[in-house]
Every structure is written in C-alpha cells, then in structure tokens.
Length: 406
Image 1 (cartoon, rainbow, N blue to C red):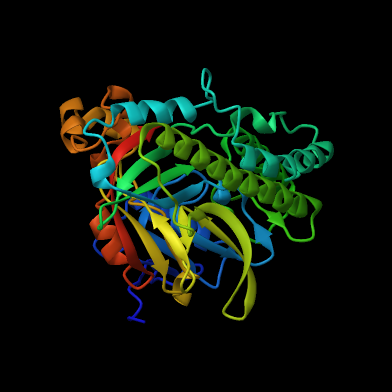
Image 2: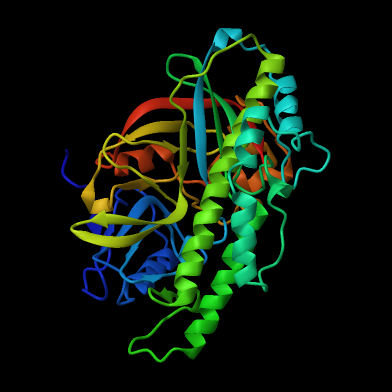
C-alpha cells in the first residue's frame, strides 16, 4: 500500500487527532471548526478521519468518519439514515442505445417518481422484490419501535418505497470505459428514516439538557446517548431498521429502473455483482484492537477488496472503486465529490446557461429548480480522487448519459 496521504488538521493537540485526506481540495473554515468541535468530545477517538469531499453539515461534518467509544451521536448519523448508492452493469453497450434518450428518461421517471411519487406506478413492485419485502419483517420491526416511542410520528412503510426523493438524490444511466451500460442511483430511507432521525436527535437534546457533565458540548447537535442507557439501544435498533429500509428501497428502485429499460431497449443481462452501499450510517466495527461505533457521515466503507461507488456531479464522471483497507481512515473513502457551494449560493451564482452547457452531453433536466445541483456547485471529482489514492483504487470510470434528479 502507498504511504497514507493524510494531514493533521488540529496540530495544536486539542481533542482527538484529526486526520484529513484533503490535499488539493478546499476545506471551508466552518467545516474545519465543526470537525474540531466533534474531536473535542471525550468519547471520540482514537482519531477522527476526514474525507476529501468534506463540507459543513448539520450535526456533523459531511465527509467525516467519527469513531466513538460507549456513545453515539444521532445528529452525526443525520436524518437521511442509510442514504447510499446502488449500481449494476448490464450487457448492453453504447451502440444499442437510441440516438435520443428522452423517452428512456421519461420511462424511468414514470417508474420511479421523485418525491413521494404521486401519479407513478411504483406501488406495484416487481414480484421478486415484493415477495422479499412481504417476508422482510420491516413493518413488524417498525411497529415494535413505535410501541416504545409513541411520540414517533407515524409514517407508512410502503408509502415512499421506490420513490427517489429530492435534493442530491438521482438515477443515472452511464457508460464505462468499455462503453458498457450501467444503472446507478442514490437514495436513502426517505420520509420514515427522516422521522426516526429527527425524533431521536430531539430526544438526545433532551437528555443533554439533563446531564451533569465534566466537559463542554459546544453544539447541541452533538447531543449523545451513552451505552447502557435504554435510549442508546433503542436508537441503535431504529437506525438499523432505517438502514435496512434504505437498502431495500434502493434494490426496489433498481428493479423499477431496469423494468423501464427493458421496455425501451434491446434485451439484456445483468452483471452478477451489483454494488449497494450506505454512506450515512453507523455500525459497530473492530479497528486497532478496539470495538468502536463508526459513524460514516458522507463516507463509504472501503475494506480491502470491498467495492464501493463514488459519484461525481450530474455532469462529471463517477467511479466504481475497490477499497484498499487503509486502517488510518478506518477503512473508509469519500462518498462523492462534495459540495463547494451551499444550495443558496449556487442558486445565486450559477446561471441557467452555465448549467445547460455543463450538462449538454446528458439527457436531464436543465431548469432553474436543479441549479443547486449543477456541476459547478461541487468540488472537482478529479481532485477528490487524487486526494484518496491510498484509500481506493478505481475499477470503472462512468459517465452519465441519462440523469433523473429528485
């Protein structure tokens, strides 16, 4: 393995060390301070790992890997619990795609509507996935969580299954370096996961207000549960549910996209090895001889040989990667390019013409509603990949030809 490519971001020794894979990419002052706030908590460590797509987030910094001992921070996991990526390669090649991809994009949008999906036919899942969902126990598990937490707002499990959501969620049809056709998508646990995350963040804040601590918590979004407390176990159970729901949601959407493609394109087969990975989640893992709770807030597991997905923006390339198992990063890598502009700033400075030029090669939306997702709002994916060359190796380089935005 090559020498680790990180730099220390808190050389003054305050709090746990912060190791950042940020060479050649911008790190905003506010994000840097947020990282220092997290590293200052006594249960964080042995160090904090920062990925090259780092930027300011709510609760915790996006692009951070937060190891904790005996505590968990709900706002670090966030409200889009289990958000992640899925991708699969088909036997199709570029020559088998029609000259105009507008009909294919429309077919995908009908199968997997954005938001809550009113008006779509997504409520009839493919038989194989529908059977698996029926026996998954997701609804029963959520009922048990609600029984212990009647304040948790009700949200039907199936209401948003196979819907994309908004913001930076997307579905893409891509071509790799051999002109093979891929399907790739990005989404999470949707409204139910959001309700779970919001509810437990508030409960953690309530707990924080009652605690007598021997240390300072600089931000109430860093409120936490301690191992041994009932809310700790109940939160872990609820997060586990949301992560399972998110993975199932991506599988179901992938099936629906493939249905749309089969209606529009020549017959094709699928690669047996699909990729489905979270990048907003928490999991107990063993690192450096310790059992730690690893919260990846905009980061992907990259154990040695493990496949992952690092998307660019809606006008730049994306990558299928293989983890190098770098122990300094807790075997993690970035989850994307990372924002360099807030959504508000992007809407102010990026013109519609700039967006149209940046996405001219893609069948996608080019209206003002998606300006905040334009490529100029994101960091250079080339710089991000260069900064983490000791974390992953590139297996496939993808460029999108169709992009469906939430």
